[in-house]
Image 1 (cartoon, rainbow, N blue to C red):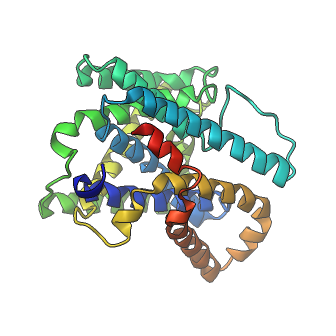
Image 2: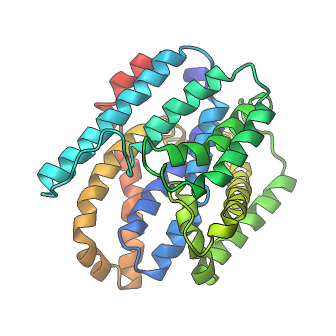
Length: 324
């Protein structure tokens, strides 16, 4: 969507989610701090599922081949860039894997597969696809062999959110008309989730590995792994939809514009995160005080705004032209 056809609600939501993505990754660099554990867990429950939901909401069965090729190219651009930074600039002797990916590039490949799969199944009732994909997602964790290979685990786990987006196209593609009566439950759900992540962290942090979508079921939950996954799906959907109903639908200066540029933030901030992770001890020492924690989180938010500037659209802007 461009110009007058843009739905500001989704641009606003995407920018907010991008802020949370950067915050979550900053928190992961200092995960030994209980506060950052809570922030990480709280964000990971819904940020990627919501991004994928919005992608499904905006899915079109037009120029699918171009879109798929562009996202596969982005996958390789991300993968090679991260390898070069970590291997040559930071001095890590890493092995390059063609078929396995455990880092940020997974999202590009997963989107390409989601688009292609949804196009191939376009004649099938989306409700049936959702139920079937949900079942696969619930049981994928029993297979230790998929994991990061072709990001299959994340594809299986997150595809139901893409299908949900497609199912919601009729009512939500052009934005939601939400009354204040819906906003109150949204606030209650989000506050309840924040409370659980903060006050019941020792119990809730168990679910971290499930929210990432890439981990198989571990021994402690293996026998009931599918039920744990279903529980996490419920949390992701509830918290995600709670956030959606609270997002303003009007055009917001700067925010709405920057919501169109989340891909470039995703790309550039991960390169910076790779560098940041080299200074874990120093960051931990800096964040030992309340001032340090606040400054660290504000830096993450400021970085999101900076990387949303048009100058950081390169080298990704040419991919946008391919998709048209």
